[in-house]
Image: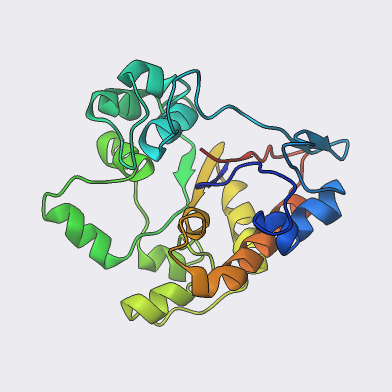
Length: 248
């Protein structure tokens, strides 16, 4: 499973919808069209794009905390909490994250689940300090005792940084990791997934783009995501693996 933070299906608008403004090879080459509110469900015969309702029947703007808990744990978190909440998980859902997530299910029933993201030393220092404002995925792993990968796992080819190429870790955190192409990141993820019944990878720069936090890097990041997804969908062996790409 690949989770893309903050992506949805929008209007066929060549001015404001980046999928139409810049084009998106993943949609155009693999599915033959770009999904929009006017054309929400697309299939090439073996792969499918379809919408889900992120509100889950609860009024208000969907948020990451309850949306991701719903996706990863299979329950209606906004209804359970009584509202949409985020970006962090709502405290009353912690016991569900600990016991009911897909990562926990496949670990407990098949001894075979893996969270493919890696975290820098600064993150582990943050956790050791006692602070608890963690994303749904990291809180799930912390509560359930699921391994969180480190920089050594990235170097060993056993994990990915959340920005795919390692460039941001080098530039912002002072690491000296080998910079890889999005295509290589996709192939690494596919290789990792072959070893487990369930593998999760989380990509969140898409959410940053949506909130205009990385406007100067928009086209570069957008293109990298496109190449990553194109390679995943083009090279996945659908006879041996089910690939789900979703968002909240």
